[in-house]
Length: 193
Ligand code: GDP
Image (cartoon, rainbow, N blue to C red):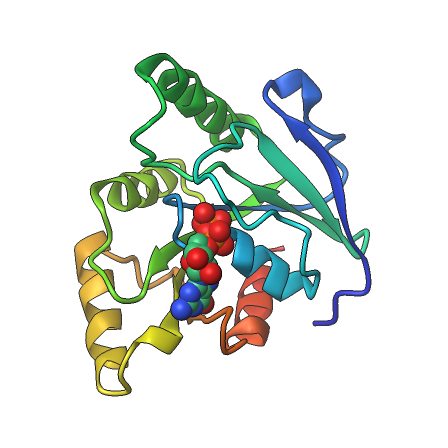
């Protein structure tokens, strides 16, 4: 898949601000600092589309990006950032909850996890959440470049086990640094759109 056009559309804190539901959407979630912004920039071949965060967890809105006028990527704020207070955490949860439950053009969730580590409690919750609402998931294990060859299979197995991975879902190995997994991820996304 070739991205010719990648464009920021808008950011939305409320449902009333979502763009018209005329294109399929794929949302991307992951804990703060997992490499989500880098991934968005890498797969769109656009070095500044999503800001690589100086302050993790700062954006508290859904950010919509138009890809080739064919689909939208929706950047969900990084979760699990300790410094936001409970009130913000709550409304942040509501915002994502409303989006996942009510967005009829939503075709799937890209859940980004760190290939080196066990998925966190938040990762597990996010995955279970998607399963509960019957949203197909693409689990992306990023920072693959940090792994030794021998650990690739082992960690994939570990991540799937911790998530209680549904074999109907897709798993993609990825690295923004080495630019690996880009086509695999697009294939997985297009399959859902
Ligand atoms: P976000 O908070 O999830 O949007 O994460 P960022 O994209 O801002 O990245 C967080 C940190 O991880 C930065 O220091 C990045 O340079 C680093 N990072 C992102 N992707 C990769 C990757 O594929 N490999 C490695 N080794 N580091 C990465």
